[in-house]
Picture 1 (cartoon, rainbow, N blue to C red):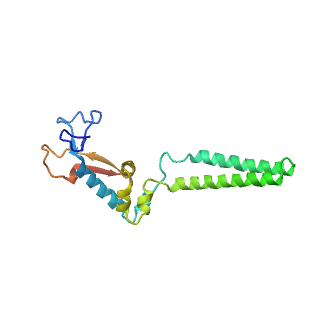
Picture 2 (tube, helix red, strand yellow; picture 1 turned 120 degrees about the horizontal axis):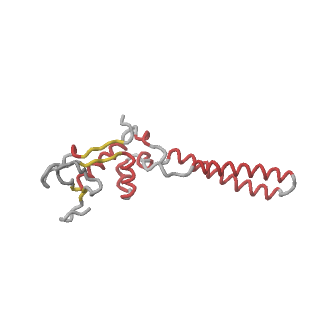
Picture 3 (cartoon, rainbow, N blue to C red; picture 1 turned 60 degrees about the vertical axis):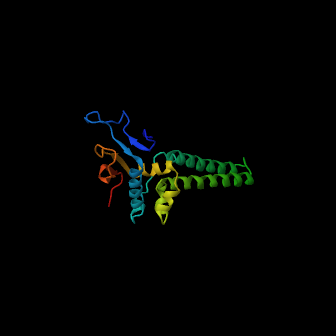
Length: 179
């Protein structure tokens, strides 16, 4: 949110304030915190073991529904083969339907395979230079990457607005195991 001076800040919202804390809320200048977090993200995604971070995302394709669809398509292909033997459909109909079914089965296979490795981190990990890819990401994608990698807790830097940024006042909890 903007501060009273127009600078971008992070500030406790009433619902997240620690009511047991005797002091006021935490308000921090956003730029130094964002620079610090950005450096941590890029450093983590530049490590040789960054590929280990790629996992199946939540909210991806419904793999169970895709598998059910594939089973139904295969069942239909078997029924069409039986219909062909009985002369209910001609060869051209059988071949056209089989081609369409196989195309869809290939699409389903690709979606299921992609679900196993797709992740918001993939473009950054796959790139030779995570920093350059990071710069090209929009804000919502950067936020998704940060949420995937870590949780961030801002602690009070102490009283007084003119203190230098102290990285020790930013608690980062990594979601994946650190090596």
